[in-house]
Image (cartoon, rainbow, N blue to C red; front, side):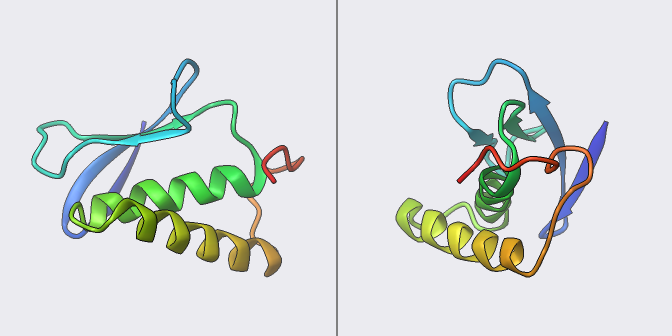
Length: 95
């Protein structure tokens, strides 16, 4: 199991085979909170969704449109700089 610490709070990071959305984040006040990422995602799209959900975890009150744009911008920059995860970025099925 993987855990992340964001803004001093611990989140479980879970890859979920059957998730209706690309990602989900529990409210910071939720006991046993988790960030869930759809297992089907690869490449830059997966990076974008992970950043998106971590931004929610860091500041639950930020507007969804702002979160989406910020996450996409950060993911695009990291991807162009060559960020890749060896286990799930061998092929870009994202964008």
